[in-house]
Image (cartoon, rainbow, N blue to C red; front, side, top):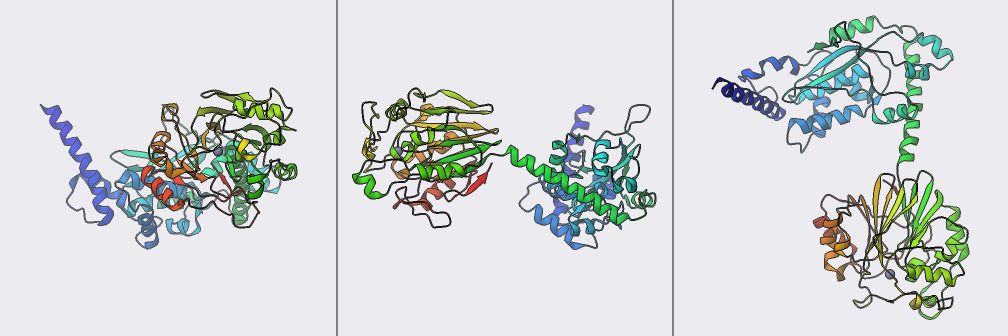
Amino acid sequence: MPLTVKGKLLKVSVVALRTFGEISNWRFGQAKGMQDNQEHLHFLKPSELCDFDRTPSIRAKALELTSGCHNNDERFQRIFDFVKELHYGLDDWDTPASRTLARGWGMCSGKTNLLVAMLRSLGIPARYRVFRIKPEIALWHWISGNDELARLLGDAPLEQDHVDCEVWLGEWRPCDPSRDSLFERGLMSLGIPLERIPVTDDAGRVPYLILASFDQWAKARQERRRLREKRNEIFARVNERFWRIRSLGLDEISRTMVHVRWTGAAGVELTHGGRTILIDPYHSRPGKLELAFMPLNPRPRAIRRYLNMLPGKLSAIIVGHTHFDHALDIPEFVKDFDGPLVGSSSLDALMQMSGISNRVNVCSGGERVELFEGAAVTMIRSRHGLVAFGRVPYPGEIEPSMRLPLRASQYRLGTVFMPRIELGGKVFLHAGSANFIESELNGCDCDVLFMCVPGWKRVPGYSTRFLKIVKPKIIIPFHFDDFSTPLKAGKKTHNLPFQDISRLLRRILENAPDAEIRLLQPFESTVF
Ligand SMILES: [Zn+2]
């Protein structure tokens, strides 16, 4: 059956090519006699501009980037990502690869040339692709503005030359490393399209010029450069504008991210798009004597001081359960706040006692509450950790018939939730106490898990099975500070004793090996 044979032969040749790239990665140039690869030898050679033979740093960088890679697809991706993220800037057409690597920036031709040189230095065939694109008018106008630079730059060209490349990964795959992501972000924030539109011929095809060496073409193109006078000055001024575009990109990234702080005890602050969600905020922090013997009162000044420094507009408050270290401050927080307040009937009783009726969005477990546009919380039913001598402290509900102020022991547990917050395209799971109910966690994957430390040893599944169910990408251990001592900026935080955090971290690494652990100090901020 000729077809089958042919098919088999084709497969063999593809496998041989892949193997070739891999062998030559560690023994460059030793793959003689592999006839299938003859046609690719052109695309492995150095040249004057593709100078990896004379500049060892090119191959050294390529090897460093690809350490631990198993195949050429992975190697290509690492090198491509590296070259792409070098900053894009206006430059000469005929820049050697070594120069682009040393400077750490370049334009389409320079960055492509470096990518080709690095790939070839590892025995991965790569070739240049030159074509014409429609002018990037919007970018041109933004760059030239209406000052002297516009006069120096002249009118936008009718067509532009563009250089990218193709890499051999069992087939020729085109790739364009020219613009760094931050620059692209900035362009997007200006509404400038990222797409480059190739100029086609009469038949509607793009006449690509495929080259093994682009030295001749690049030198000829440099000869034809429109900008001859004051070239370096113009480059510098244009590149300065590119940096302004990048700074817009940074703002854009910052706007799209969720800014997070752990604020002591189970307190978490999530800020996105200028709005802040608080979970279990606790800033009064009464001392040990008060906790043991006295009725507790929120400290309005401490709360006010915190609210004055809030990074966004206070937009929602969520309460996981009604122990004093989660709920004591809530009536004070709610005095000047009329947004969503989500919690249990026990919280509702506390609010009624404080003279604020019908204020709580009362949940009993499983409800999903819209907080504001683009933000929601699901109140997953949970269990409290076993902390005091293996028992749940202060079980039961706060009753509306009680009178304020309450003692620590009167801040009864109420329903326990593990709030799951969707914000800024991310999912945050707040395990404010070290326990869980497996049947409530179906499909409750999360990006970020706030993981209560105290009591973790008492519930064996909490550091094993629980992590396998919720599959966090990032874990923030918290609630391990001694919440009966004040938090002072710049001062070391007192931690609760006997928590064995290092053993917990080892357990996390064993059971969620792909998760990243971020160990924060109170009020230290991080972004997602
Ligand atoms: Zn508690």
